[in-house]
Each structure stands twice: as C-alpha cells, then as structure tokens.
Length: 266
Image 1: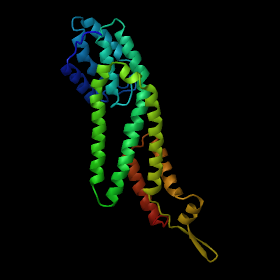
Image 2: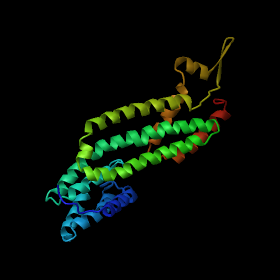
Image 3: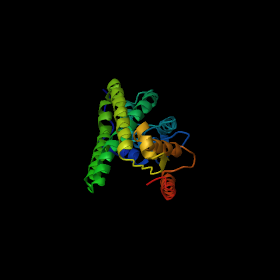
Image 4: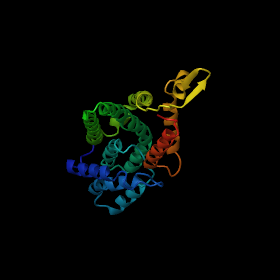
C-alpha cells in the first residue's frame, strides 16, 4: 500500500470545492469537467507540487467530458484522488477510465434515488399533510433530503479510504437498487396523478331525458383519464424549446380560467 500524502484537511478542501463548483462551470463541451479540475487541483498540487508541468498536463486530461449526478460525484472524486495519490505513471489514465466508466451508471442511481424516489415519496407526504393544514410533512421531507445529502457528502471519505473497490465491488447490487427505485418512483408518480391532480369537467350532454357530464363519461371509459391527459400535455409542453416551469404555471392558470369561464371546468 502506498504512503498517504494527503491529510484530512486536504481531502476536505477538495470535497468542499467540488460541492461548490460541480455545476457552476457546466457547459455543453465538457459538462462538469471545469468544476472537477478546480476541485481536484489542491490534491494534485500536494501530490505533484515539485513538478508544475505534470500538474498542468493532468489538468488538461481532467478537462475531458464528465457528467454525473452531482451528489454521487463525490464518491467518484474520492476514488480518483486515491488513485492519484499512488503517483503511478498511469494514475491519471486509470482515474479517467474509472470516472468515465462510473459516471453513467451512478448518474442513473442518483437520479432514481435522489431526484425521483425520495422527493416523490416525501413530497407526496408533505402535499397530503398540507391539504390537511399541517406543515410537518414539509419539515420531514427537508430533513430526509438533508440526511441523504450528508450520506453522499461524507461518503467521499469512505470512497477515498477504500479506493476503487468501494464503488466497483457493489456494481450488481447498485444496478438492482436502481431498477427497484425507478419502479417505486413511477408507481408513486402514477398514484399522485390519480389522487392529487383534480380536474372536474362540468360540461353536460343532453341525450333524450338523460343528462350526463363529460367527467362521468370519461370516468366510465377510464377513471381519472382527464388527470392523466392533463399531466401528459404538461409534460410534453415542458419539453418544447423555450418553455420553462414558470411559463407553464402561468399557462395552466390562464387555460384554467378560460375553460372555467366557458363552462368546461368547474
């Protein structure tokens, strides 16, 4: 095992730099690489301080395309710093290969767990409690997300201490976890569409002596169909160029007012 060069203070400096800059220099050429170079620089300076040309060359190499889930990127950074600390001639090539190989799978894990599962589940709890007049669900959701953030923040040190094996040895288990979280997240989203989105079409049709509303007709074909259709249209609209969430909110408000005024919604 190679001698440790970096101290806990050096590692914390790299981690805090990464947390602050991982999305700040985001661009379409190399995505998160700019923040990565700024974050790993203190470690390279400590390891190769006697050779500025080596540091300069390694910075150029790390400017290659890089993009993953920002929270989970902490783990990759920790493992790559551990590789660089060996001062092996091929350390940077090995670190880049690890970074490139893991950024995609770990991005999927991060999106499924951090961006989908926890916000969806605890956001739903917060929404239901808000409907009941309680703010506790909001605080619970915030606390859970802070705990998840802390796990991945301090996971940087575990990834550094264990090196490459920390992540790669659990590849199969992580893949299964990603699939499970994706299924759970989609199930929760489906339940939210049916139970939280509330569209009531009051437009009526007179057929002989029978009067029927559009809402009841649609529900007899597919319950909550209008809810699903509305969410589908909003999702498609957000994918259009120039559309933002703020614009979509105002568009929903305007359309709702117009449809209510003409007697379509109630």
